[in-house]
Structure formats: C-alpha cells, structure tokens
Length: 80
Image 1 (cartoon, helix red, strand yellow):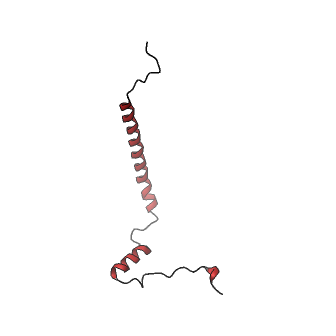
Image 2: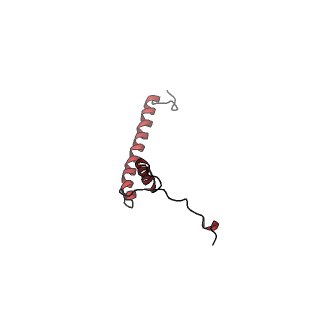
Image 3: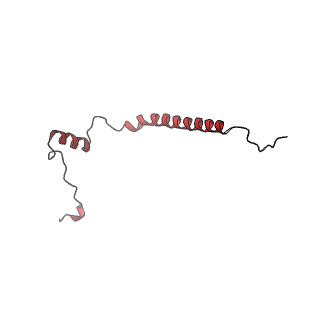
C-alpha cells in the first residue's frame, strides 16, 4: 500500500489553485475599492482648483507672482 503522506496533487495544480485564489482576492479588493470610491468623493468637488493647479495654470500663462502665496509665518516668531 502507498503511504498516506504521499502528495496526491501535482505542483502545477497547486500553483494554478494558488494563482486562482490570488486573482479572486485581487478582484474582491478592486470591487471593494469601487464601492468605497463614491463615498470618499461625495465630500470633494471635482470642479475646485487646488493651489497646485492654480500655480501650474499661472506658470503656463507666464504669471507666477499673482498666484503664489507668501510663506506662512510662525506666530511664535512674530513680534507683538
């Protein structure tokens, strides 16, 4: 009789099954990300410009002084 510890499946089959499990996990992760994407974007407006967008637009127009902000000043360093 054969030993019960003998491997009954080939490595190729084990590898195919492992890849299938990984693909299913990736697919589920993508599905969950798509479900959560609308809830994250509800609070954000896609039409608003960020400061980076405004700086990029200003540079492309040749005017960087009107769109740049001064560096923030630490209130602890300001003389009152």
